[in-house]
Image (cartoon, rainbow, N blue to C red; front, side, top):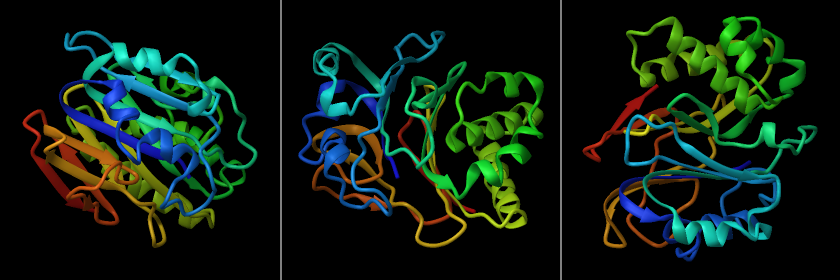
Amino acid sequence: MCRLLAYLGSPISLERLLYTPEHSLIVQSYQPQEMISGVVNADGFGIGWYHAQKDTEPFIYKHILPIWNDQNLPYLSRYVESGRILGYVRSATTGQALDFSNSQPFQYQRLLFTHNGRIENFRQTLYRPIRNQLSNEIYQSIKGSTDSEHIFALLLNQWQSHPAKSVEQALHITLFHLLELAAEYESDVSANIILSDGDRLIACRFSSKSPAPSLYWLENDSNFPDSVIIASEPIFNGNWTTCPENSIISVGEDRVIQVEHI
């Protein structure tokens, strides 16, 4: 299981979000507290962020090194500031390659996508059924072999097939479809997802069986006023709210949180 982190608020340095908190994403990479499976998140990491200018695509910095071994990230983190940030440390599923194509966040135009969870026996179960439903454009956009990227592809396919629907609605349809496929092919799926279009954060805590991987949000904390943080684990002591299982969480530019039960 991986660890996820997202921030929406006033611009801050990456350092303040990634390194300063006592249970930061860096600490969670080697000392997570709420992982269902795995011990450490040493199989790479990725950070995505958006520029204030809204017509630019997001920026991504990622590596297959453990995040604590990257010599450049501390310097980069002191320099880069953003009000829309996604972070991720990876604990790879057995059998999945450690290469850049399998590293998150995944990007499509303005969208950034991160996933914590797994499709059980993905290669033997839902790999072909998912790929068979994709448009040629989305199919060709897949660079790696992870279940995470295929879930993102399925979401993109749903969104492009129903352009009048919101990202939240496309995500809702995608999760139901994954549930149906998992039942048909006798698999299980867990999908904690955080994605952004540069203006909003959209997340879900979802699993075909309980308990789903942990996910929390925090709003307007004194350390990060006028902001919302979503994380797999609280990054410091505060008034964190547990995301309900099988729910979609939307955070708009006004930082108002909406929860939809699936």
